[in-house]
Length: 336
Image 1 (cartoon, rainbow, N blue to C red):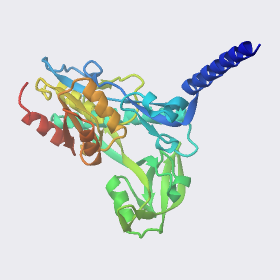
Image 2: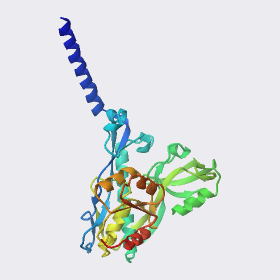
Image 3: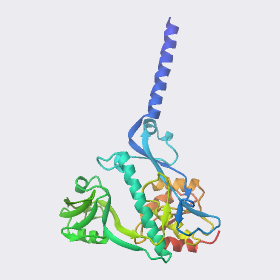
Image 4: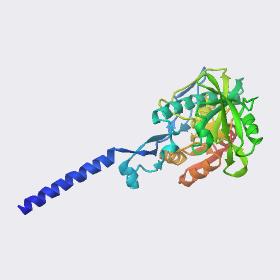
């Protein structure tokens, strides 16, 4: 009888343990996981009207990151996470009150803007006439720990500050430089095709207690008229970080052999003036580029480049601040 009871307890314990492990392996927690993906050749995903990329070895590569809810077993046991993955809190992915599905829609809109800006920058660098008309300053993200988090939202378009028209990022920066931390700014916004007025309090910049900031990430919004039709299709990939590889591929299809026989991976948000801005998930992107066997990895200068070098292994990381600098660097690399 005792042996039978012991066997029953052992079997029950094993079943219970299996059930617990199953739940831990399948149930997601509230946190997220950034998971590396391999770099992908961008050839065939970008088409410029009447143009073809030069033939030859090498090519331009883009890299993305999978963002998903972390499973409980991955949260509790880090060794179960994919190689190169990082655990991040919800606020690193979604804004307060924003769902993940809403963030996905927003990321796809960012991708569309990135495609248009990349086309404008590359075509202009190729000697073609591109017409751009600044329309305001687009709010891309709002810090969670600033007063503006209760007032502004991603997608807002700032068109005036304290009654003065604002059409460029530089004009917005000048407006914040004119006040002290804690002072308030009256903003006129375009939101969902409506014009609204909002007042936001500024805060001190993290690196300078005397400098006032709103606590938002912004980009230039403009009407862009391209001389050639440019089609870009990366499927369900979202976000602005493929702007630099987009621009490189478009420039290549204008007849410039920018890769010079090398597998050139790149990441970076590109602005209308050609400047390259930092991106997220740089650790995972570096892992993805390494796994694809790329020769070089162009990344935004500064913290992004420092992080990429930390995980690069033997991969050559090249920091760039502008599209012009990226082209110049690639021209100096020896033909492979």
